[in-house]
Length: 163
Image 1 (cartoon, rainbow, N blue to C red):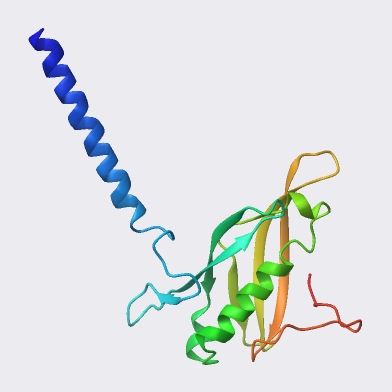
Image 2 (cartoon, rainbow, N blue to C red; image 1 turned 180 degrees about the horizontal axis):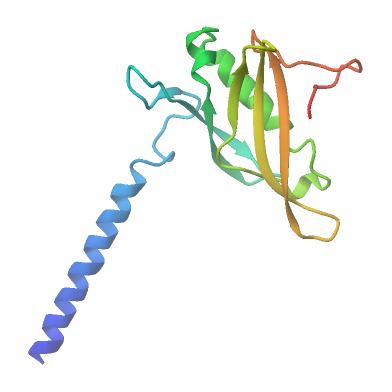
Protein backbone atom coordinates (compact mmCIF):
# COMPACT_ATOMS: atom_id res chain seq x y z
CA UNK A 1 0.00 0.00 0.00
CA UNK A 2 2.86 2.37 0.83
CA UNK A 3 4.36 1.66 -2.60
CA UNK A 4 1.11 2.72 -4.30
CA UNK A 5 0.96 5.95 -2.30
CA UNK A 6 4.63 6.64 -3.11
CA UNK A 7 4.15 5.94 -6.86
CA UNK A 8 0.97 8.04 -6.89
CA UNK A 9 2.82 10.95 -5.27
CA UNK A 10 5.67 10.70 -7.80
CA UNK A 11 3.21 10.64 -10.72
CA UNK A 12 1.38 13.67 -9.31
CA UNK A 13 4.65 15.61 -9.03
CA UNK A 14 5.69 14.66 -12.60
CA UNK A 15 2.35 15.67 -14.08
CA UNK A 16 2.27 19.02 -12.28
CA UNK A 17 5.89 19.78 -13.29
CA UNK A 18 5.19 19.01 -16.93
CA UNK A 19 2.14 21.31 -16.92
CA UNK A 20 4.27 24.14 -15.47
CA UNK A 21 6.87 23.60 -18.21
CA UNK A 22 4.17 23.74 -20.89
CA UNK A 23 2.80 27.00 -19.48
CA UNK A 24 6.30 28.51 -19.41
CA UNK A 25 6.87 27.52 -23.04
CA UNK A 26 3.60 29.19 -24.07
CA UNK A 27 4.78 32.51 -22.63
CA UNK A 28 7.33 32.89 -25.44
CA UNK A 29 5.04 32.01 -28.33
CA UNK A 30 3.09 34.38 -30.53
CA UNK A 31 0.08 33.87 -28.24
CA UNK A 32 1.16 36.72 -25.92
CA UNK A 33 2.31 39.19 -28.56
CA UNK A 34 0.07 42.18 -29.25
CA UNK A 35 -1.64 41.83 -32.62
CA UNK A 36 -0.30 44.32 -35.18
CA UNK A 37 2.63 45.56 -33.09
CA UNK A 38 6.10 45.78 -34.61
CA UNK A 39 8.42 43.92 -32.25
CA UNK A 40 12.23 43.96 -32.27
CA UNK A 41 13.47 40.68 -30.77
CA UNK A 42 17.11 41.39 -31.48
CA UNK A 43 19.64 43.63 -29.81
CA UNK A 44 21.39 46.85 -30.89
CA UNK A 45 23.66 45.08 -33.38
CA UNK A 46 21.23 42.57 -34.86
CA UNK A 47 17.68 43.85 -35.12
CA UNK A 48 15.07 41.14 -35.72
CA UNK A 49 11.66 42.63 -36.47
CA UNK A 50 8.41 40.68 -36.28
CA UNK A 51 4.72 41.49 -36.55
CA UNK A 52 1.92 39.13 -35.55
CA UNK A 53 -1.43 39.46 -37.29
CA UNK A 54 -4.66 37.52 -37.27
CA UNK A 55 -5.45 35.82 -40.59
CA UNK A 56 -8.43 33.89 -41.88
CA UNK A 57 -7.96 30.61 -43.71
CA UNK A 58 -10.18 29.56 -46.61
CA UNK A 59 -12.52 27.71 -44.26
CA UNK A 60 -12.99 30.92 -42.18
CA UNK A 61 -10.94 29.70 -39.20
CA UNK A 62 -8.79 32.39 -37.65
CA UNK A 63 -5.13 31.95 -36.79
CA UNK A 64 -2.16 34.06 -35.77
CA UNK A 65 0.53 34.53 -38.39
CA UNK A 66 3.93 35.99 -37.54
CA UNK A 67 5.65 38.05 -40.23
CA UNK A 68 9.42 38.36 -40.32
CA UNK A 69 10.23 41.95 -41.31
CA UNK A 70 13.51 42.86 -43.04
CA UNK A 71 15.32 45.41 -40.86
CA UNK A 72 16.01 47.59 -43.94
CA UNK A 73 12.27 48.26 -44.21
CA UNK A 74 12.24 49.70 -40.69
CA UNK A 75 15.69 51.27 -40.42
CA UNK A 76 16.55 52.45 -43.96
CA UNK A 77 13.15 53.05 -45.57
CA UNK A 78 11.80 54.24 -42.22
CA UNK A 79 8.31 52.89 -42.87
CA UNK A 80 6.15 53.22 -39.77
CA UNK A 81 4.29 50.46 -37.99
CA UNK A 82 0.94 51.34 -39.59
CA UNK A 83 2.36 51.17 -43.15
CA UNK A 84 4.06 47.82 -42.42
CA UNK A 85 0.82 46.49 -40.92
CA UNK A 86 -1.08 47.58 -44.04
CA UNK A 87 1.42 45.78 -46.28
CA UNK A 88 1.19 42.63 -44.16
CA UNK A 89 -2.62 42.63 -44.24
CA UNK A 90 -2.50 43.20 -48.01
CA UNK A 91 -0.18 40.24 -48.37
CA UNK A 92 -2.43 38.08 -46.18
CA UNK A 93 -5.50 38.96 -48.22
CA UNK A 94 -3.79 37.93 -51.48
CA UNK A 95 -1.79 34.94 -50.18
CA UNK A 96 -4.25 32.44 -51.68
CA UNK A 97 -3.89 33.98 -55.17
CA UNK A 98 -2.07 30.93 -56.58
CA UNK A 99 -4.31 28.33 -54.90
CA UNK A 100 -6.60 26.41 -57.24
CA UNK A 101 -9.17 25.77 -54.51
CA UNK A 102 -9.15 28.90 -52.37
CA UNK A 103 -11.63 27.58 -49.77
CA UNK A 104 -9.05 24.95 -48.73
CA UNK A 105 -6.19 27.48 -48.33
CA UNK A 106 -4.35 27.55 -44.98
CA UNK A 107 -1.80 30.27 -44.18
CA UNK A 108 1.77 29.27 -43.33
CA UNK A 109 3.28 30.37 -40.04
CA UNK A 110 6.24 32.53 -41.14
CA UNK A 111 5.65 34.87 -44.05
CA UNK A 112 8.35 37.44 -44.72
CA UNK A 113 8.67 41.04 -45.92
CA UNK A 114 12.00 41.69 -47.63
CA UNK A 115 13.53 44.76 -49.30
CA UNK A 116 15.58 44.49 -52.52
CA UNK A 117 17.94 47.46 -52.87
CA UNK A 118 18.65 46.68 -56.53
CA UNK A 119 15.00 46.69 -57.62
CA UNK A 120 13.91 49.21 -54.97
CA UNK A 121 10.92 47.00 -54.14
CA UNK A 122 9.53 45.34 -51.06
CA UNK A 123 8.51 41.73 -51.52
CA UNK A 124 6.16 39.65 -49.38
CA UNK A 125 6.93 35.94 -49.49
CA UNK A 126 3.84 33.98 -48.48
CA UNK A 127 3.54 30.24 -47.99
CA UNK A 128 0.54 28.09 -47.27
CA UNK A 129 -1.23 24.93 -48.29
CA UNK A 130 -4.37 24.16 -50.29
CA UNK A 131 -5.95 21.09 -51.81
CA UNK A 132 -5.11 20.30 -55.41
CA UNK A 133 -7.51 18.81 -57.99
CA UNK A 134 -7.08 15.36 -56.43
CA UNK A 135 -7.94 16.55 -52.92
CA UNK A 136 -4.34 16.25 -51.75
CA UNK A 137 -2.87 19.12 -49.73
CA UNK A 138 -0.19 20.92 -51.74
CA UNK A 139 2.18 23.82 -51.00
CA UNK A 140 1.18 27.24 -52.31
CA UNK A 141 3.80 29.99 -52.62
CA UNK A 142 2.86 33.56 -53.44
CA UNK A 143 5.12 36.56 -54.00
CA UNK A 144 3.48 39.97 -53.63
CA UNK A 145 5.39 43.12 -54.51
CA UNK A 146 5.19 46.64 -53.10
CA UNK A 147 7.03 49.84 -53.99
CA UNK A 148 9.51 51.32 -51.53
CA UNK A 149 6.73 53.40 -49.95
CA UNK A 150 4.63 50.34 -49.17
CA UNK A 151 2.06 50.64 -51.96
CA UNK A 152 1.08 47.34 -53.59
CA UNK A 153 2.20 47.20 -57.22
CA UNK A 154 -0.47 46.64 -59.85
CA UNK A 155 -0.25 45.13 -63.32
CA UNK A 156 -1.55 46.77 -66.51
CA UNK A 157 -5.10 45.53 -65.74
CA UNK A 158 -5.11 47.13 -62.29
CA UNK A 159 -4.76 43.79 -60.47
CA UNK A 160 -2.06 43.17 -57.85
CA UNK A 161 1.30 42.25 -59.40
CA UNK A 162 1.54 38.79 -57.84
CA UNK A 163 3.89 35.99 -58.82
